[in-house]
Length: 290
Image 1 (tube, rainbow, N blue to C red):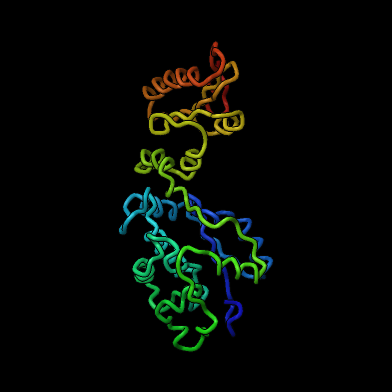
Image 2 (spheres, rainbow, N blue to C red; image 1 turned 90 degrees about the vertical axis):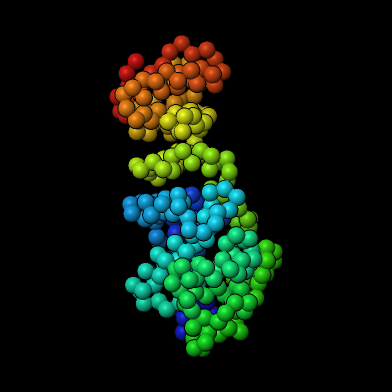
């Protein structure tokens, strides 16, 4: 896009609650934009209203899911809707993505690309330069603002052409492939029970990647010393064994629930500890009591 005449390119990076595969490193994005002298806009879906909207999208997608909980078409459209708000604000007439036709079977087939364009109300404004010659012309191409001859006709899952372009422009890139955590079936089994919680937070989602989870993540056991320390810093009730073993983070709904969960956590700690446990400490926020 920077090689097009009279075009000023700016970047938009979305911080997503469940990551985005090879594109999840915000610091990598920041360094790239500094190197290329490109202005960077960040839209954070892990906080406030945007987080709630995103969780609602995961719970009730309008279009099909992938093999797990991944509503890829809805997610793409949601990001582009927010990008359009930004584009209108900074008076940008064209939105550009790196999507490649048929690279992803669910979200990047021709129908899906068309649906995303319509849902985000970007008809004629959404340019996919890597596959543009295989898609309908955008308004900018028709008007001669964008030179279509400088665009590409890449199709399929082979990344050979993209890798060649990356080398040409001296762009570092991670191993192609992967996806967000919503594509991981085992992760989604832990996620499902907490998705409908009205008070779900980004912290709850972060904790799903730590330790062993029991009773819809009401009890989380550390798998090693590092995870124990992380869990012990969290808000809530922490059960710490006197001998070496897993610490437990307990999230109770009420006092009765708390009593039951503490007893269950004690049993689980003893089960996973390598040595016999003689007793426990209860750490409640900042107060340590025997």
